[in-house]
Image (cartoon, rainbow, N blue to C red; front, side, top):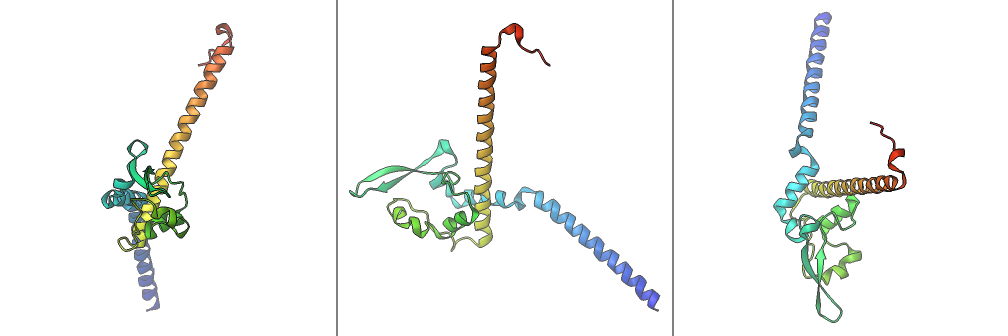
Length: 175
């Protein structure tokens, strides 16, 4: 009788182990799909929420705002895109999204015509995390592209300078 129970237990363990493996593989496949990525969800949410109405979609598409001067006059001020604020920490971004301007910047922020609202009443913690993930991913991507472009330009300048110094007959013809 105990051999039979042992065989049933072993089969049950194999079946459960197989189910765990299948579930793990399915989770890995789903996580690689865009709609399950926090950054992709964050970009979609930013678009649906209308973030680009105030922040624009890029350096070429800035949105205007006005800052009230001490004299009471209004002066134009560009609203930075979501990734140009110098906010490069998830906690800071999530605080801005959830609560609007932090206390340290609240007074300066009140002088703006358009003010960043608090979204904690509209979005749950996961959605706010997704927005922050997308902004940070966008910052990183733009930084890497700018760094690569600067590197290409530096290489081009060095190559041109080398060609200007070395006589044509002395240049290497390596292939």
